[in-house]
Length: 173
Image (tube, rainbow, N blue to C red; front, top):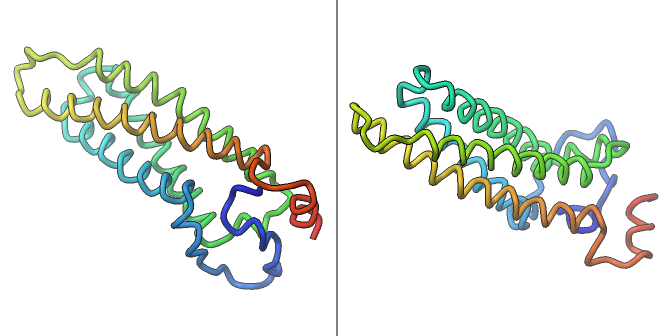
């Protein structure tokens, strides 16, 4: 948990204390990337939802992936922002976050490819074409942000950037 915000204060909050906002999380790479992922994910699923996606099965997959990971990203964001991950210290949050980001990256790759392949410039509704093309672009950018988050989550999981003494103190304090 060395790379995660608030890792130096790990488990400093007592189980009965109310959640507190962690402002340093917003300034961390993972916090910033989660904000960007939430905004981009919102753009992807809202652009697809504004089209006649129900007529094309491919867009159902894109809608599922973007909406599912948008909701989960918001849940992880709130969990870290309110420092709730410190109350459930028995869960290896850095590993969970790394696996989540890796799975999101892979599924967003499939959503991006599916969305981009299904865009047809000869669509009879021009606004559907524009929205689907924009959704393809934002799905690609979202996929990249999840990939970068996977990198930072991996570094946090491995404890890169800290030494053995500080990781022992924070893990068993």
